[in-house]
Image (cartoon, rainbow, N blue to C red; front, top):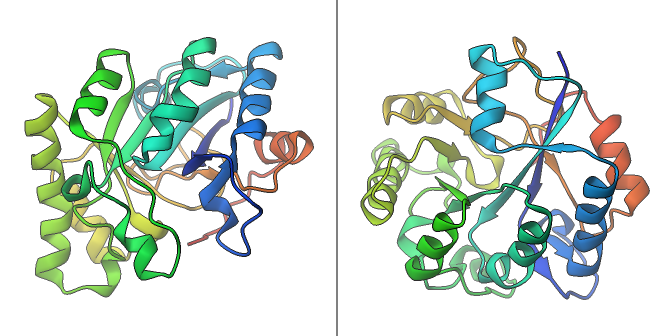
Length: 243
């Protein structure tokens, strides 16, 4: 059984080299090169749902595969990343902050960073019709282990309900903001009815070795060259927690 590299992106666009938080930025030039490389080298780029069928339901996988995920639902996913993905026919999953659709990423402003716009529901529905899968990323993007239990449960459960009403379909997957969780947070995600949750534990995913509520991902950072991108896919397999 092969390994699955679930890649984690945030913003895609034209950026100056950031002094910190480099895993939340990917320059569009490098993103285009990464996607072209996956396509030309014949990688299996599969959707999150298919990956979970392999990991948890026994679906066979020949060789290794790559999954593309994008956190927060930035407008630049629609403007910059999606045209590239569409060109190559690559599936993607985007995790949305349910109470901030069409607004800005307020949690970045609170951290002293620019707060770019987030996609609104009309764009999200348009992308869904074109095959993009959406998951929940809470209502307001807090660090879930650092807020009171009642508020934490509301962030987890209500984000699912809000998105399901807006999309008129089930929302099966959750993503922990900032990769922050504890046992209580994981229990709340299970109780809310999600099928699985994605973490920031940086490793490959292999059938029989992954908790469905702690699915690992590999962060693609601003400074990753194609050599670094290759290394993360083929060599970065040992689990490492990062927030």
